[in-house]
Length: 313
Image (spheres, rainbow, N blue to C red):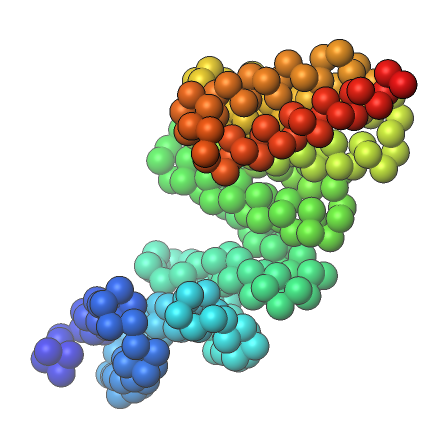
């Protein structure tokens, strides 16, 4: 069937179907590697007779799919070093070349997507400074694109959403690097952008992460002013989660526990138990006593009561 295909994009579409089939059905690494080898060979065979941009677009699609498979497929276990080498030597140069072609729109992976992939690979390899360099490049490029978009269009909303995802990735990276205050700010930035495009649920989850990071940062300094801000963030986050998920959703468990933590850090011990009891009631009603989340909250409630008892001695 591939031999009879008239265009490279048809060839790529066929190989994409073959890859998805093997990933979901056969789960054979050998067959997948063979598909990528044949796909690459077909592209090279047609290179001389195709438009150069068409070749580059289809080649970038193949490389993006192959690198993602090598690095992040569960059956693979992560060939990160091999994936990174392929990304640096072949995928990134093509993405940069395509980025210079501004006259014609193309459907290949954009340069910022290549930067995202590089950041993710370095993150998996625990090379956090390198990962930070690439995600910052992606963010800069995406911010420029959002500035150029016509306000109120679907394109602008989509680009803002992807920019928010990049902010979230960077926030998680900063948290891994134990830069908790910076991580909190980046999570909050992502949440605000998600709210601007109507993604309230995703924004609420990002606010939870922002509050968690800020409280971790506050634990180091423990100034009353900083901790008070952390408590206010926890209260605001709970409000956003209630609006996004409803008053009895299990998604409220984490912001309620963060609120309790904020009260404890500020020395308001009499206020600590109420949020935990509410979280426990929500999870018991929704999940039952045997669920792991219910058990975790119950354990934390018992620990809280033990600590409260110690403060009275």
